[in-house]
Length: 116
Image (tube, rainbow, N blue to C red):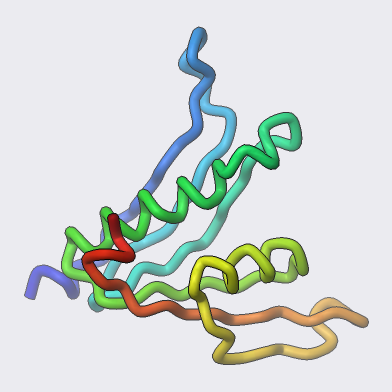
């Protein structure tokens, strides 16, 4: 089954002039799921919707690879709010990780319209 094969997935932000990689998203597809491992947008580029675009591009690619859902986790309250705005739903919380905080686990079902 093609959707069961584990493959890396990367979407990068490059400097328009130098082509240097400035940030991006890295994850894996496999077992018909996308697992988003890292998202980084440089502070100087934040507030421009780049994280939303990175996630959208990753979702589109994952859907094309046969994935039906995405999961990710975060410790960052701002990132948590972003993911929830993008339709991700919490399915778990590891409290006091790190001490005094929480690690949140989220998932989202992919649909053709959501992947576009």
